[in-house]
Amino acid sequence: MAEARRQRVSAPVITDRAFAALRERFQSSTGISLGADKKALVEARLRARVVAKAQGSFNKYCEYLERADDGSEHQAVIDLLTTNETYFFREPRHFAVLAHEARTRFAHGKLRVWSAACSTGEEPYSLAMTLLDQRPRLPWEVHASDISSRVLEQARLGVFPLQRLEHMPKGYLERFCLRGRGNYEGKLRVSDEVRNRVQFYLHNLLGSARPPSTFDVVFLRNVLIYFDQDRKLELLQKVLASLVPGGLLFVGHAEPLHSLTLPVRRIADAVFEKTG
Image 1 (spheres, rainbow, N blue to C red):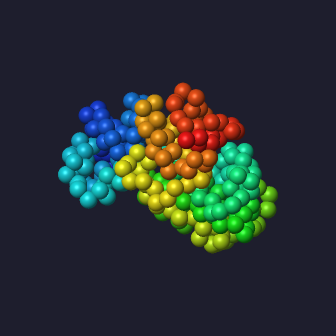
Image 2: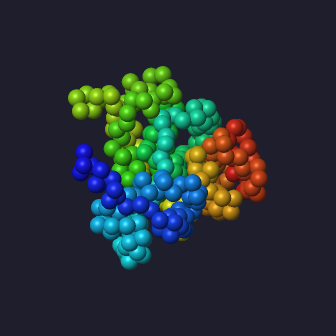
Image 3: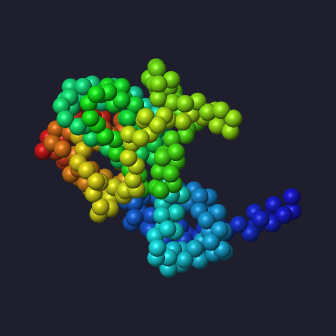
């Protein structure tokens, strides 16, 4: 008990200067603005990293980040500060729209779909299940990217807690998933049939690198809420540049686009067609 108290006392505490430096670094690399109310969150998520790197304080850790030049520590900060909350078939109506459009609008030729902030993989795997069901003999691809290498590692494993299945369509669990046993009790593993159809890669939506393809459908859901108006417009322009004319953009239901001047028209709730 005394040892635990000593550890709590010696734990590094974030200073205003360190918090400001970390906020600026995080925003410059991701475009995401951390509010002043996120100081405790940043401290909690980075404290173990500060201790692990033997920096002793958040101020010294910021100095270490300035010296680090291989990018790995910088990526570690991004991984720890990005929020990843998702589950299978989130906003189910979107998958119903995709299923319909996959059979009609995109009935000819290869269909390319991009999950542009895929988190731990539930969204792209939901997309792949939908397309395996709706286009069993037609060609398609699912690409999935995220700024966090940590969540991409989880996504590639394809192992998830059963609690994330609330919206999975009837029959999909038995068809596309394997229930865990022993150490994996209470979890599921996405089948190889699904996992092998999703291509994952690290990608910064506001970076200079473009995704490795153009797409017919882009899912960019529950991402725009983290950006200010200028960064939001910049991000959407980059994403739309990778979407073919007549392609579809899916955004979150709490992410209206009416205040932005973009070459799109609404065709369903939070679904937009690229017009130019």
